[in-house]
Image (cartoon, rainbow, N blue to C red):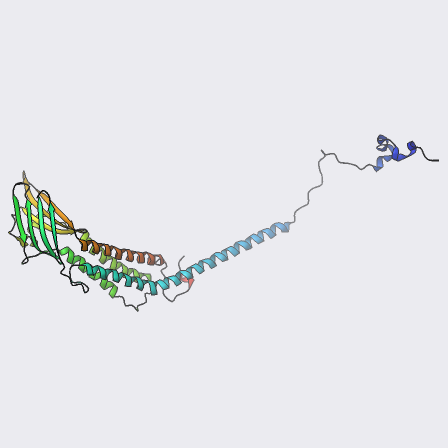
Length: 330
């Protein structure tokens, strides 16, 4: 006879299945608020030691790479230095000489196959008729000039004088600049084309001499020497004027930058104090402008080479043929 559904345990009410004889079938559960008492697994001590060892090894490797890089850079720097000494220095000196010889050809005096004695005529004036000079410039001298000017103490009176071929007015600045240019070219010619520079000091010495000569040459034209008016009045060039001027008057011709300038000075006695008044006229001279530009280009080229060599001059042990990076000073 089939069993009643009520006698079958699988059909018993749910609350009866959870109690009584069926309790041993129910799994013990842990409340969500319970605290775990099982400790977490311990880390192995070898893990930390292994990490430290790896880091030390990486640091050592990086240090070796840095040392290798520095030695490679030092070696490349020395190779470049040797190339500059053997090749580039001579190439720049040759280029510099071409510039300076071209500059010499612009001078109106005999210099490096320059025929010299170039003749030019100029008119310098200050209106209204305060000062006027019509002159001829031949080489480094004024060979002819007609000068007229009005005096400060007598503005209605015009003073006249002249310069003749028999007694030219010497412009010493032109000859001084030409002499300094000649010196600069001589410093280049003293270096044989086959000579091998061995240190940066050798190159810097030669470049320093050339730069010094070029600077003196430019200064001769840019900055005329200042003289007291008493010295101007008693100067040798004043004897070139015909007729001679009174003792309280002085005339001066000079170069400043690319200009030829005439200045007339008059001594004045102001209540026992000696003062002077002046008149001045100027005109641009093309060959002066060309000379100054070429001298400046020569200076720039020298300075560029000097700056490049100075980069290597910090390595005092650099010599041609020495390839040992250990000889460098870091």
